[in-house]
Amino acid sequence: LPTLPTKPGWVCTTLYKYQGFWHNSRQLQGVISCQKHFQSQHTDILLVTTPKSGTTWLKSILFTLINRTNLPPTQKNHPLLSTNPHILVPFLELKLYTEDSNPDLSSFTSPRLFSTHLPYTSLPKSVQDSGCKIVYLCRNPKDTFVSLWAFANKLRLEQMGSNSLEQVFEKFCEGVSLYGPFWDHVLSYWHMSVKNPEKICFLTYEEMKEEPEVHLRKLAKFLGCPFSKKEDGENMVEGILDICSFDNLSNLKVNKEGKLPSGENNSAFFRKGEVGDWKNHMTMEMVERLEKICEEKLDGSGLKF
Ligand code: A3P
Image 1 (cartoon, rainbow, N blue to C red):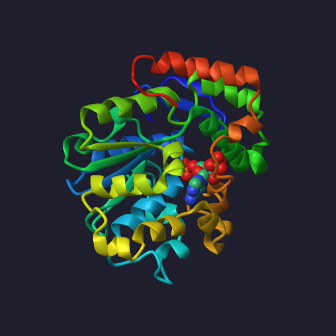
Image 2: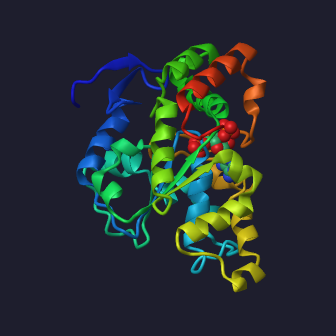
């Protein structure tokens, strides 16, 4: 690893600042390898998310959406029913390029669907230059923070004991969280999506929750595979949303049991799946402080949570 500024983090003991964002040592190896070796194809689809913004959900939706002709969501042996979404749609820097610095991706058929948490400025150059499409998902910072805190504690509990909400909050506000600062991540994609809406589809967890059908149709159009009249007659949109729903996915045996090869329990990716859980955890002072930071950081951008 290059010599980089470090800070004590809260998922692993140390976070490294690389190209303006915080990473742990495991993911940083993957980031550097993926930047060096990943060659994007113009038909690729890249799902980019901030951690805990609903990555697992969007992985499921995109996988089902682009494979719907060969694998209708109502099919009894649909892959989502027996395979965790993180296996079906692998992370570049957290999976493919950590397991091998230059993996053979020839088994992925077009359109290849990958995922990453990388900020725009750290994407492999070929992603920025090629015609590949980017679907970006983020979530309001208060729910993102609570979900991140709960997830980190689930992962840490056995080894190190839990972190208090206050400890994690302080770091989050300083911008020190995995792939943080949160607002710099979000803004990097927001600005690019305004400039180039053909390349980047910018979505939030809240709007997906509020109007899932509208946004699924928007995604299908963006990816060049809009729903046909025949599919509307077959209730394809509902079928995709049903199989990918929190209730369905979180109750599947495959997601209740077992672990990912990287060690996380499959169940750790499903907690409440709601908008506004921050109200049950954050104090008024915390809310005011985070809202003030976001207001300042997002000022003039046209983006609001
Ligand atoms: P909560 O912790 O607020 O419940 P990620 O997949 O990026 O790690 O994000 C995890 C968050 O998405 C968790 O939020 C999780 O419960 C929620 N989630 C997982 N699957 C979902 C689904 N199918 N629909 C809606 N939310 C989902």
